[in-house]
Length: 318
Image (cartoon, rainbow, N blue to C red; front, side):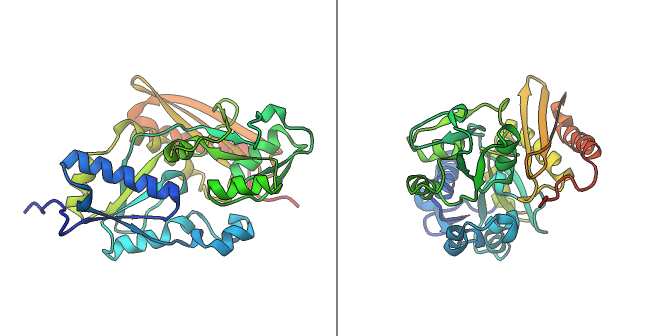
């Protein structure tokens, strides 16, 4: 029997982190579901769930993520609430998502992808090329750190975390002269801050950057039906290739990996790269395949790069 649609008396619960960006993504999900099924906002409830990655003591300490945990830092508690039935769906930034879901959960709905590019941010709005020798750049991303040092080994990179407002405050306090933010997050928040977008040819983004994914219980047929109505097929096709590439590399917050898939008619073009954590070496490849073979292309590209890299490529050097 078909389950009834949500109503103000029995709302559909959307789980999310509590950051401004996470809330913006949850509200976008609610708006799209409401429009698809002609439901009022009151038919949904946005449930804020604090994750380990939201612990202010960890963020303010600026400890490297590799010392705290992995990508599950930002998803574990939300997925537990989903499994327990406390929420009906979970909204995630896909670049934070592990490549495997807990048993009983699935991730098969993606919203239309935003700008995939990284943004270079300074208080003055200067470009990356304008950085003086020895400048201090703040980032918590091992990918960005490695890519930066590969291009400019003269720069000093410091640990730098927090939401957009926190990072801008740290720039003002002189912790660093520049940092990176995702264009997608700035666009979704409607923030007008000085930034210079970096094209993928110059700095390949994180796998799944700019994409929102919505997770559900595999056995929840109502959630499956509702999410199918707002799923963006092209985004799903691109992420299938990118996340297969990441999974084959065993990617985590401790491995500098970048990847981007783009659609060209019936063909998928995938670019990927892996870097040593200190930026001393970068291995890159790209390839094209029919869209339906995107995941296989991602796995094949990962195998090729791993063979070139050899053992210990991702190890930290003293």
